[in-house]
Image (cartoon, rainbow, N blue to C red; front, side, top):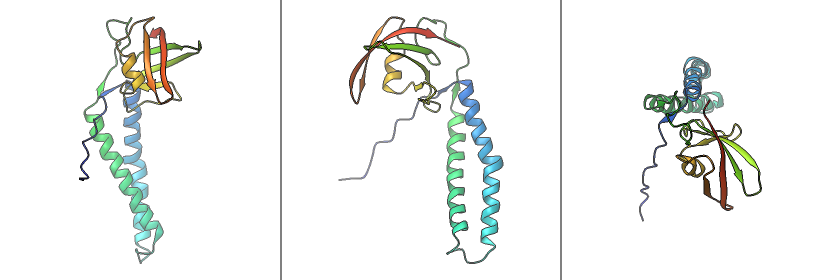
Amino acid sequence: MSRWKPPARPGSRYITPAGAARLREELDQLWRFERPQVTQAVAEAAAQGDRSENAEYTYGKRRLREIDRRVRFLRKRLDGMVVVDKPPADRKRVFFGAWVVVEDDAGALRRYRIVGPDEFDMQDGYVSMDSPLGRVLLGRRLDDEVRVELPAGEQRLVITAIDYE
């Protein structure tokens, strides 16, 4: 039995202007502020002597590796992103960036925004276009009925509103 795993499918490359700004802000924060502070702390810890038993040095180096890994990821990800800043020509269908209101069988209304995988946040109602719900909603029209397969079972939703801000 081999340990080979097929490579993970990369997420969609689309992002809203607000999401791109948030990623650039995180990159700037890490590179200009946090990394120099951690580098300074590691240098001070290294000057104290024996590094093998110096917890500040060990944890500082670990944090530095985490920052560098995240900076590499953000730079690579931002280079290939497509910022979608205009609504589609057909505003009666669900596309990237749409706010969609759906009604379930119980009559409960929920509002979701279709966004890229780098900016989804369930607390704000953002749903990734690569998620099961996002894939089902894309391309649908007002009053369309969709079925979403969830861990708890299949759920039927009706699209009651589509809006682009």
